[in-house]
Image (tube, rainbow, N blue to C red; front, side):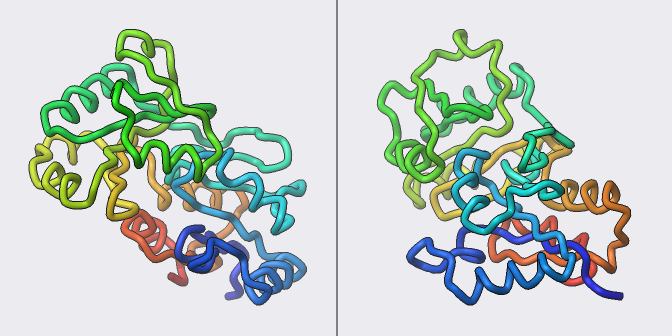
Length: 233
């Protein structure tokens, strides 16, 4: 059975070490599209961090889709129409924030439009994330963000600090949330029903495709869920 949908990660997969799309990768995507294959970017980045790439690869046309926030958001690229949006509750956010303070790790939470941190001393990796995904940073106390819809929260810090924090995460957190380490300095926390695998499966079902007609390409822990649900990992 031929492949009809390919979900592909960005960082370390679609982009080379210079964060560029090589001519060979560009042509492969255009050839796949011309053959009627849905090429879908599946990334941990929020949508503003993907828009330039969607335009560069001509993946912003009618009938194109994108998976962002590690599966927390799935939408049509040309209209912005959402198929899936899984957000953390305010109680979730508060518990994640309290634990970050207890573990001594920097944290922030992200909506569709911005990065919010209660760390007055904003962490360097929060600044890095802001630059990477083209989103503003807002310093707000927990009390000031009760009305925000956070798609994911992140613990971000030096690898040795982050690893020490991960070692102390309670089992209750793993039972309650989707938790994935996407880089040595990023730990991402999402609603339990949000991951790339669920997103790819939902999109394939919407398009009337079987598991055997799907493929996924990725190289990090946050790609594992989609690699496990497709016919051709």
